[in-house]
Length: 157
Length: 358
Image (cartoon, rainbow over all chains, first blue to last red; front, top):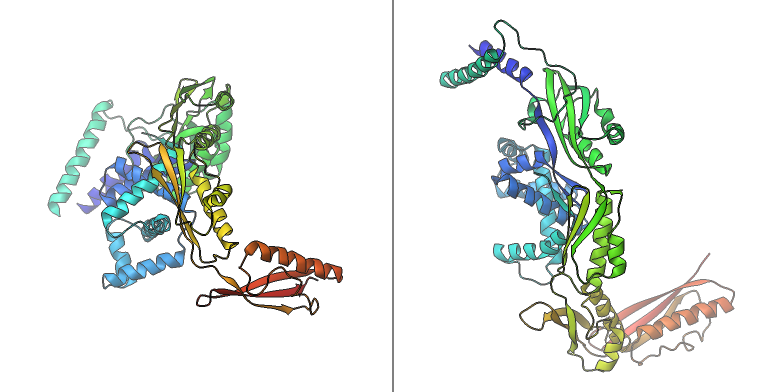
């Protein structure tokens, strides 16, 4: 039975028609958002493709405005903090990351984006209160509005 | 487990039967061809993992004219013969878009066998623009309007960016900070849609907290003027100039911040408020020199005197005096002023360090 199943699977993948490997989903001042990034975000963040793409566009706008990138050692530090916070070691944390459908490299990229956004908001807060999630979200939107307005954003359906 | 296996079998059988019905009896399914497709796959599923790891047997390019195709092929040609992977595909898409010749690009792959694939790039060429139409934007100057217009150019990102940046710079300079500038194409026409939004104009400039320096003197150093457009990007320069003015009058602990305060509920009329915390006046404390000697009376010849009100501009003049004195002695020197602030006594001690340049 197992052998038969294997034959069927191999045969159907060999003769399946063309598959979409990737595509440009959006461009922000020439920087690209890929369909593969959107699909990954849909799975890991459990959001719609439209929301996933909008979030990736915002991430590019923030990265461009921030003008800095968190270093590998800062990401390692964040990983250690997360592992410690969950009372597990790095190996167990990485296993959990894989279980949720991400590679370690993809998870590190996500962390890089989160760290960058956090530092960007802090740098732009200019004394504004950031105590609650609502305050942070409001400031984020306020800061993003002019960036969205000023960038050339092309979205491809 | 056995239930899952049965379900898989059933679904695989259903697919197989559908294929068999479409073919003449006893005809085997045709082997996949390595010829390039003539049209873009219409309903291909996103399934990159089924082809990653296979060797790229052939590259195809659809959607571009002959001349553009040649240039695009150059960008992706190295992929042929390599193993297909996610990073390589993204790198190809970036290289294609970076040519500036296309806007959209998709990558499809079809298996020839489990180890080989034909990869097809489907692109959308950027249009050749025959005319530019500007929608909205009544405040645009004739000069800027003329620059935005044009004909017979390819609608590349850099062409759009250049026009966007120019229009943006114009609107910022005129106080239209909420202006939106959007692009779209209709056939060979590029449409620039402008919504200007409110115009932010300075109603009044206020200097809250200013006591030691007259408002008239403060007004002289700031660029913000009543009746002029609000220029947010220049307000920090104004803050720097106000801070410098206070520094030159001994207020070395001064703090200046700026705020744009809307006059009414509706956006537009704006007060520019500089909030100044002056702090005490500091005087010059102990004066000394170190490093290369320029003579015993070098300090005495300086404008900065112990007990005088601290002034940055006077110190700058003294630095030049010391350099000049060295030149007269046939030496070229660097002069660095080091300060020591005494918050309790409100004094600033100064040491001029002099080093001879080789």
